[in-house]
Length: 157
Image (tube, rainbow, N blue to C red; front, side, top):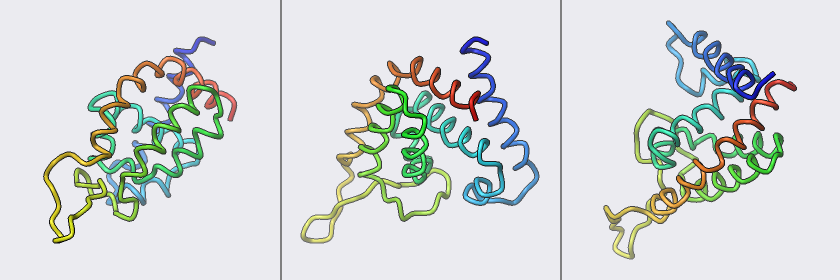
């Protein structure tokens, strides 16, 4: 079996999960609870991959998917390959700058905002937003290796 067909299994799991959501009035959090564990992993990793691929880590955070960062890090560490561990480290770095107490409501400001001594916040990009931009290209460079590890993982569980 080639890596492409293994990666296809990842997409098949995501498609099956999203099909279960069709016609349901579920939040994203409820959706993740309602699907099978293997599908949940596929969705969490798939959303990381697609969001970063399409708009960088900033898009992944801005669309609320980084709120599941702790679980994603645990999954990546379970996969354990060198690419997965490097991606986990990137997610950890980003997660430090995300307000993980928020609830996913679609596009929103999930970045931690810091205020000055007068309680004013800045419209300037946060440290997390700046960091995110520096991690995009390294993530893209890791994708072939990481995809192969994820594909192998899905084939083994």
